[in-house]
Length: 316
Image (tube, rainbow, N blue to C red; front, side, top):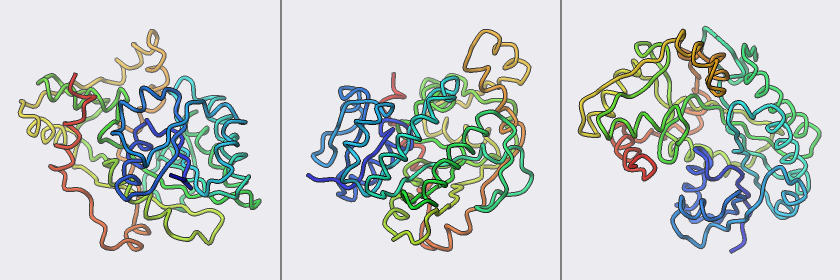
């Protein structure tokens, strides 16, 4: 089955949700994956998904796959300590591949670009990163914006806060759900008792697919999708524990503990500079998106939590 859509990072958190939403709408896709066997274990068998084994760092392969594609979903990610260099090269390869057919690049953005901002982030808010990873995100978006403005491609940025849902397997989210199922403490950083914004990945995927379907007139389109602001992560964790049928237990990793462990654990060294996002409330304003899709509603929280808890990756 021929596909107009190439998905990069399809076995990751947002890429998985985006792929599953397309499949649910009977839209065929091509996934470039590093391990076909692993990918086939994550996705249910369907003729709507074509798997190709390879690496996004292989620019020649990416160009071959992109020749007939109208959309390239750029969901590529690396562990924090491997961002520098890898993310820039991957993005350059995506741009060159998209330019063959002036394809639309869909890029899930985040809030790192804005640093510790006191007001809700608007689509036009000035970028002011206060961490290296924020600087890298600004650089990546600038690369793609320049390409789009030079008529090499189209660019759709959908900016998201923290996210959770099926197949969100990073070490910030996976232990929350896995531990809840076992009655173990659910971990968080710095402060559990301030408002925090999160997105359920299947909801984000629905938004991105609907935005993809709109004929993009401008070279660059940017939309925020903020999901829900929870009164605190403690209240959200209590609801997760309730759905798991276990007592709510919490484990807070303080900033001084992160700083201490960062001496020995490389990924914590990278997380250390991001603690401002856990000590403060930083939120996206998504009024622009809500006006565009006034009838859109998030998945009810209890239903979303049940679905996430049933994800096979949290069961072991």
